[in-house]
Amino acid sequence: MRAGVITFPGSNCDRDAAVALAACGAAVTSIWHAETELPALDLIVLPGGFTYGDYLRCGAIAARAPVMAEVVRRAEAGVAVLGICNGFQILAEVGLLPGAMINNAGLKFLCRSVDLEVATDASVFTAGYARGQAISLPIAHHDGNYVCGDDERRRLEDQDRIAFRYADNNPNGSTGRIAGVLGAGRNVLGMMPHPERAADPRLGGTEGKVLFQSLIEALG
Image (cartoon, rainbow, N blue to C red; front, side):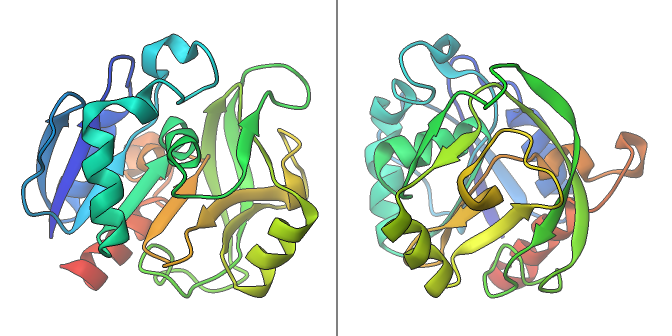
């Protein structure tokens, strides 16, 4: 599988994502945000971080980066796109995912592992999990409170496009405890938790590695 990890000014999990993908067997290319063309890729990753210092709305400036026009074009053509944390915020800002991100309900930066429920196994990202499976992944964000209207929430539920939910807690106040959302074509996933930070036993867990292995098996 050919994966491209895009680095923006302020990205801080780009190398982590590349290492996790490479450990699962992907051929990884690092891509600078100013590029206007992309090589042939099976997967595009927008990693976590604080692009442009998270000024304005988080991800709003990064969404206007030169590379994003091509990311949108590839996503609309069916290429898999994964946005993690700040990457999720960027995907929402660029319109590839519905909803928006606002400040955490407690107005505090959260950095800890949280319990999650895998809400669907019907995607290239989550096929390695069982629907309803309980997993634990780290979060690290200040603006991870996912919000959408009632109609949009019902649409996401009816179309089985909620990928992950926070389990018995809701650390940031997200609508419907939503922690990850699939795009309409099911080839785009935005998620606030960090699977790349739970992809090696030395990091304290490997439940995030399953996501990368799922992508390798589906796209490899």
